[in-house]
Length: 148
Image (cartoon, rainbow, N blue to C red; front, side, top):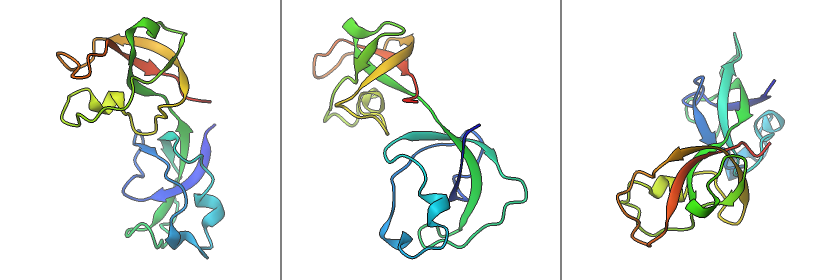
């Protein structure tokens, strides 16, 4: 069973992934704080189910309100150094990259990823989407396990 939380109605779709950003200034004084602010900042989550008959509650952050959903932490696809790209091994991400137009940028700097952390590799996906790395890195695309 996942974690019950409140999220914006626009995100409240089964299978939707998001990175929890934490408390906003507008959350101060909200009566639903305990139900909304119960996730880990910077962690990637997937909506696994919507609460049936849940009310839409007013929210100062989400213009269409919030609703109750169940979420679970999920892994992510990322580029890692090829020397470390083995299923079950630990690896850091490929590293920061200024080339935002590169087709691999979202995998070198994945949302919810921490460049200073090591992750366990769940599976090796293969070659990254770029033809060559402009930083001359030898990278492999992998699926990283959820931190939990």
